[in-house]
Length: 246
Image 1 (cartoon, rainbow, N blue to C red):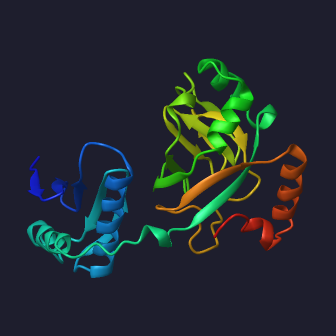
Image 2: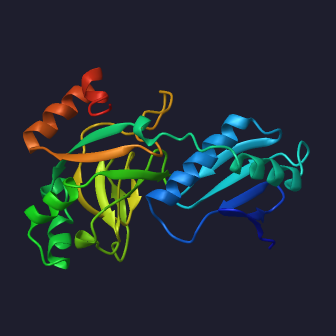
């Protein structure tokens, strides 16, 4: 498969209708900032034939219509965008606070994560809730946020066999990543808590509460607070459904 270098990134044709754009082989805030900037630039340029841009940690996939543009022309247009000033202002990204009830039946893997890392359960909660995370990408499930910035001190391998049912709102860790299951699903992440707020609402635009580039903070709450917020969500009270977004 061809690789076409283009400054900070390279092109890799993926079949006859997709183009993979790859940055450096590392994961971090600066690389992801470049991914977001180029992704936004491509979408804003409305390149003929470009149908969809799907960004990830250090790359993005561009789906295009080969009847409207050639891969050579598409690469040329994207190279032109690279020379433009980067006007992506991270200060405009949303900061979202997500309430989480840790441990117990809502976080059945919290004891294992603590034991695996030689910590107490309170230590794990303090470390996990003490960081600010960045949504690097959304995928796997509708609205599932892959969050970067978790401390290595609580890094834990996935379950040897995935659960057949992981409830919506479950907060998990897998390796050095953390994330939240927006809908019920099978899953292999270690579940340390659960949020009572809805992170995916199909009839809303956009349906996902957490979007790429958002900053996320987890706020520990009690079981009573969890039940109170969940009851508000079930009643459709907007102050609960939208809790935490700024």
